[in-house]
Image (cartoon, rainbow, N blue to C red; front, side, top):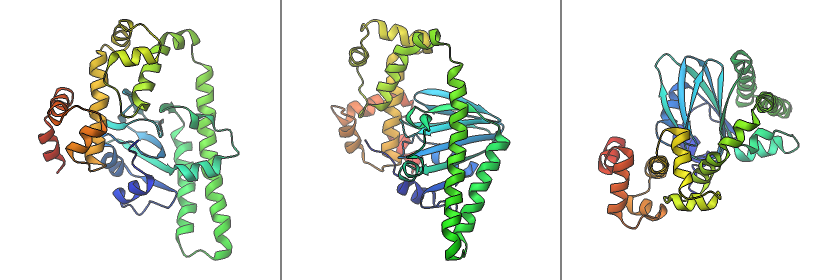
Length: 289
């Protein structure tokens, strides 16, 4: 799968708040990073401090307001749909290897889940993020060698506390789920999971019906009832997001993208892109420079 590695992310962002293991993003950096569809080998906590913004993940729009936190769990494509000028937000992006290292003896179950949105006390969130940043600044300064180990331990501990607090909130949220409603949504959830985690994404409805064990004619009706959109439209949107990711972040040429996404020809891909992106491939490339 063509992911954007954490190292590539750091190079792309070129921020003085990028460290070897994690990075703090400002609103400007979040907008810059997520304007186009992105899939990266990292964990991201995005907090809405004030205002309102929308994130697309797993082909679902997550609406964030003051105190909302969006968690990107290295699963599928994510993109910023809208973010007003007066919105205040921040994010932490954590390298997967560092995350595995500090949580290997911890039961932080949400890290095994999927992209999600939760509500958290943003004052608590900002306070914890501020402490992590403070200790990281100490580490980055001319710290005495004898203090380096202590400061790094504090950074790791604060990061774990932050993750465990989010884990606790999600666990409480999960206990409130109506199981009957959950089972009604299960086939659709399985379809979305299959679509967003299969690589390259398949374009045939019949394939997904077989994979999630439902009648072929039932799946389009189910998707339409759940989303008010056709299954072709949803598949087309995700395939197009994948194409944009490969073109913009991976810098692949059209022929390579055609091969990666299993299109029979370049002309078939261009027609498909125009249909579901609402813009020609040439116009998209010109717009992105």
